[in-house]
Amino acid sequence: MAGNTKPSSKAVFQMIDAALKMDPSKSEGSEGVYQFNLTGDDGGTYQMIIDENGGKAIEGTEKEPDCTLEISADDYKNMVAGTLNPTEAFMSGQLKIDGDIGLALKLQNILNSFTA
Image (tube, rainbow, N blue to C red; front, side):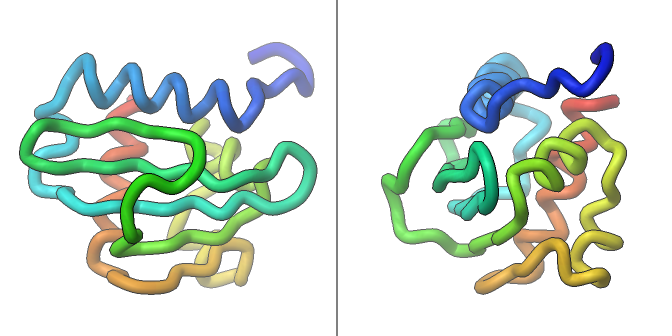
């Protein structure tokens, strides 16, 4: 992407939604409800829901989350783009995780499969 023009948080989740539906095999073994509480400009609440039927990403909350991640919208976009390592973000306090840490670890594999 050129310059500082990053897609909106909503657009990023729409891209993730499309990627999850296009290749359900990438999310196999990562079943759960991931909730993202994005802070700052362009923040909001989003969920990535992965079950036996595949995965989807939505704006808002549809199900009780198994794992909640709190991160600034900018840091989240950098994480999805592959320029911010989720483990480093967690260790430095940029990313807060509540709930199933094991699921959060699987999330890195899912995100990497989109950027690879």
